[in-house]
Every structure is written in C-alpha cells, then in structure tokens.
Length: 203
Ligand code: URA
Picture 1 (tube, protein in one colour):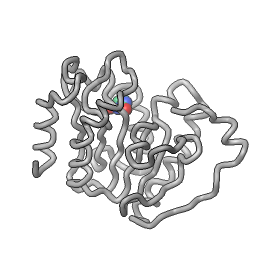
Picture 2: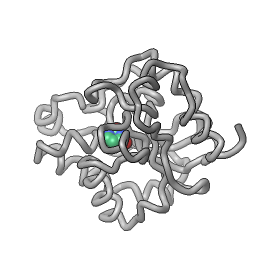
Picture 3: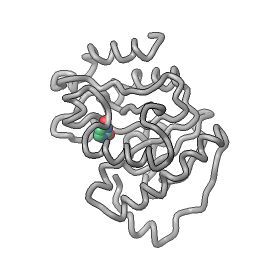
C-alpha cells in the first residue's frame, strides 16, 4: 500500500474480522494527505455505515461544531476510526476487531504523519496510551513515538451530558496551540479534585 486511496480500497474489501459481514459500507476515514491534525474515533455508527464517511451522525455534528469553534475547517483535518466497519448495534469494538483493523490505521498515520493526533474516546486513546484512564489523562498532550497525542472524551459522550460537553469544549480550545507546538511535550496542570469527582465516568 502506498497511498491513502489504496488504504481506503483495501478497507473497502477487507474481510479480516467479522465486522465486515455486517457492514453496508466500510468507513476508511477522510481528509487531506498532508493534514496536520488527525482525529481518531472509535468506529462507525449507523449513519457512517450508510454513507461510508466518518462522523456524519449526531456525534459528527458536534465534532463539526468543535472543529469550527477552534478556527479549523473539517476539510483540513483527517478523521478516522480505530475500526473501519460498524460494530453491531454500536457495541464497543472487541480486541480482535481492533487488532485486525490496526494495520489500516497504522498505515494512515504513517502516510499522513500528522503533527497532532487527537484521540476521541478510550479505544482510540488505548492505541497510543494503553492502561490509562481517560478521565485522568484527557486534556493533556504528550509525546508518543515522537508525535503529540491529545486524549479527549468522545463527542458522543457529551450529547446527553452538559458537564462533559463543557469539558470537551474546553479541551478542544488547546488544539490550535498544540499544532503550533508540534512535537514538543506539554505538561499542563493536573485536573482538580473537583473535576475528577465530577467526571468519574469512563467514556
Ligand atoms: N463515532 C465514532 O467513533 N466514529 C464515527 O465515525 C462516528 C461516531
């Protein structure tokens, strides 16, 4: 494989895990090959499976708002997922499915070589920062394999939770600065005790 189009082609015919059996369309991801920022979600939902495009349902609408609020355009970022086919009934992806799909995501990251990877939710976070708790490490960028990784809650978690919505909106504000900073590691303050107790859930 040598280009993003080839990755997308391979994803569209991939049968390396059982999720391929239930898909309407595979969702390889989209965005420019020279994107400085890559957002990585969990996996396609109903709307994504229908359209073959990432983050086009309700969580996607919120992500679009967040991207705009940060002064960015959706067309200038790359948006992908840990698994490229929809898990049945939007269940969490299984370890074997994530492992089978990893080669596609790895190739996309290698080809795009983004300055910043924003992980959306715990499955995406675990790709770079295994054995961590999202509530503890969200909103703090760190360098992993020479690349800045910025863990955030998944936008879907905020759809019915105003408190999480505020946290995500706040975390998003740091993204333009992270891009400028490139591969330098940041160590913002630890979240306060109050924040930790407010957001004990693990999305
Ligand atoms: N949630 C995800 O994680 N990815 C999508 O593409 C849509 C919703």
